[in-house]
Length: 249
Image (tube, rainbow, N blue to C red):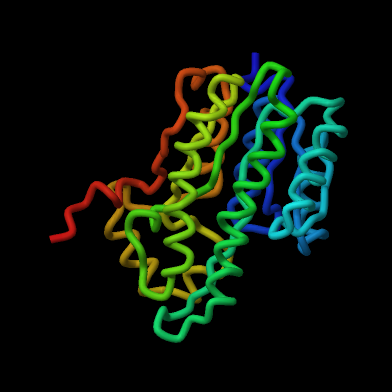
C-alpha cells in the first residue's frame, strides 16, 4: 500500500522551484493533490496534468480571506476531505537591511509567514473532527543561519519554525500534527549560471557533495504526512546534505 493512499493534499506555491518534487512525490504515494498558485497558472496546470488527479486553485495568500477560500475549495474538490497541507508558498528577494523599507519587510513577512498562519488555521478548521491531518511548513536553513541581504526572509522563516511548534501544541488534541522542513540550497534551472561562486561553496560545504533536489524535499514532506510519522509533531526536519553539521570556525 502506498504511504499516502486516500489522502487529499493541498500544496501552496505551485510556481516555485521546489513544488514539483513535493507534488510528484505526494502523487506517487497515492495522494490526490490540489495545487495553489498566484500567477504561475500555466506551469501549475502543466504540473497538474503530469500528476493526473489534481486541480489548480488561484489565490493571493497574503490576503487572509483568500487563504480560507483556497483551503475550502481544495477540501470541496477532495469530497469534503483535506488530510495534508504543505505551506510551500514564499518569496526570497535580496535586499540589504540598511536600505530596506517597512513595506518591503511586510511583503516578505506576509508571503512567508502570515500566509502560513492563515492557511494552517483554515486547514485545521477542515481537519478538526474529521480524523485530523498533517501540516508541513517549508522553512529554510536560513531560519538559523541567515545570509546577507535576507534579513526579512530569515526572520520570517525563523518565525515559521516557532509557529509550527506553537500550532503543534494547540492542534495536537484535534489529531493535527504540524512540522517544518528546512531545505538547504536546492537545484533549479539557471541557478549555477546566476550564482556560480555560491553553488561551488555550497557543494564544498555539503557532507554528500551535491546540492539538494526538489524530490529530496518532497520525500521529507511525504514522510511527515505519512503514517510513519504519527508521533512526530513540532519538529523541524533539516534537509541540507549535512551543511549545518559543519563547524563554522
